[in-house]
Length: 109
Image (cartoon, rainbow, N blue to C red; front, side, top):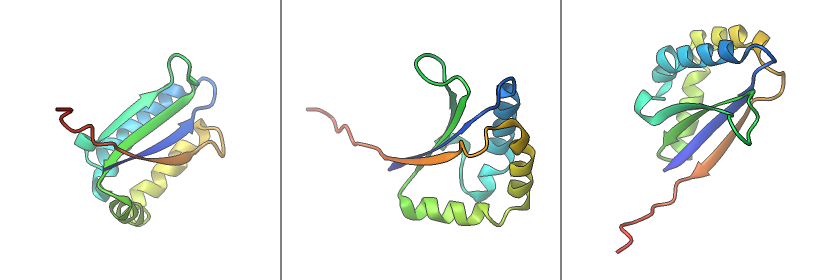
């Protein structure tokens, strides 16, 4: 299993607008591509992290599944429009993907 984490920074004064748009994306657009609510969470900086950063974390089986989801996102007109709606509220060039592997902790016995 893997965590695909997408990060973006809100412009000063627009953090709640970005959060609202990302919540809408998680409800309306993400599921169309395969990002389901049970495998997604939104987080934001609080202590020791930039407060302007908002991240969405998605649990995926592997890179193949993630690639299929990314391919599907590119075909969804609502995703393109959402990106345009988001743009005025974020720091240009701050978006990025980070991919992490989940480590099986086993039973420990």
